[in-house]
Image (cartoon, rainbow, N blue to C red; front, side, top):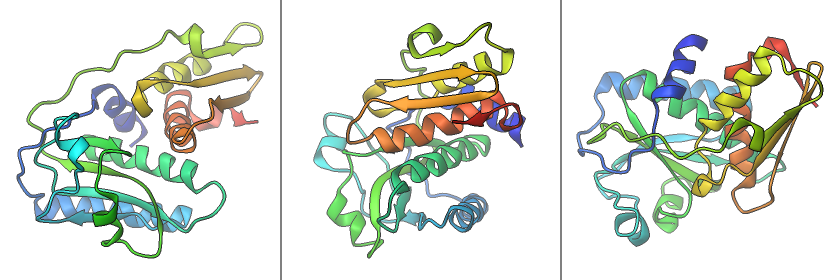
Length: 222
C-alpha cells in the first residue's frame, strides 16, 4: 500500500473540471471504507457526499473554472485543538487513495458554498471539502520551490530525509505557497508552517507527504 501511495503522490494533480459521471457503487464502497477507517483512527467526522446540487461557490465556478462537482469529501470534526492539522493529514490520505483507485481530486477551502455544505453535515466544524470523481483531464504538476528553500539538515542529510522533502514538495498547499520549513537533526524532524487561515490544514497535508516519502520508521517528529 505504501508504495502505491508514493506513486499516487507523483501522479496526483489538482483537477477542477469533472465529467459529472456519478461514482460507481464499487468506487463509493472503496472510498467510504477508507473514510470509516480514518474517522475511527483519528476521531473525525469526514463524510462522502453525493448531491444533485453542486457545492461550488460562485468563485469556484467562475474564477476557478470548476465544473461537474457532485461527489466530494466533507472534512469535518468536533471543534477542538489540532483538528485542522488532523483533517489535513486525513484529507491527504483520501486524495492519494482516490488517485490509486483511478479518481481525480480538487481540494477546496474558499471555493465551496459553506452554507449548503454545513446543511449536509450539521454540528461539526467543516474546514474544507475535496471533490472526488472522474476528471476531464489528469491535471498538471504545480510549480514548486527547491528543496533547499524549504529544508535544512544538521550535517549530511540522509536519503530518507531528502526523500521526505521531495515528497513534501508534491503536497497541495493553499495558493501553492509551500510556506513550510522542515529541519532535521539525527532522526528527529521538525515541521513549521507560516501562520495563516489554512496553516493547520496545510501542515497536516505536508506532514502526511513527508512521512510517506521518508518512511515513518526512519524518524520521529520533534
